Length: 116
Image 1 (cartoon, rainbow, N blue to C red):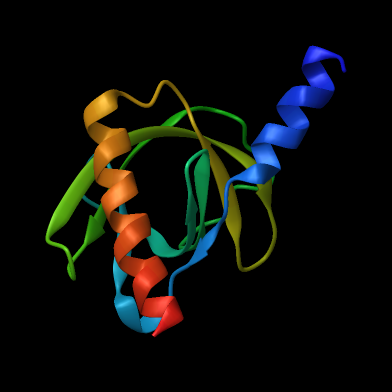
Image 2 (tube, rainbow, N blue to C red):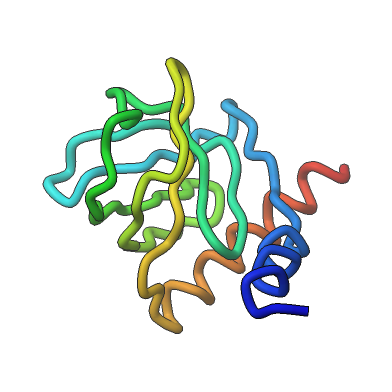
């Protein structure tokens, strides 16, 4: 199997966790302005209901994801991968170990809520 097809298989192997709107996990720009509401989170990135259109964009953004349930604020760099009128999907860029742990905690917390 080629490296490219192996990467595609691995990319989809990791479960995406849906985040309810009521969970109020908010994504902020580095300047503190609200960017959107987190709706899905995975090891490789996230999807949100954005406050602006990212469909024609491919620059890297610095965001802070704030989960009030877990009282976690995690800063990430992310690039838009797909976007529409009411969603924007981002991939993490150079996620450091500390941020990866915090993302894992948020995933775990909302995975459990989704199963309850």
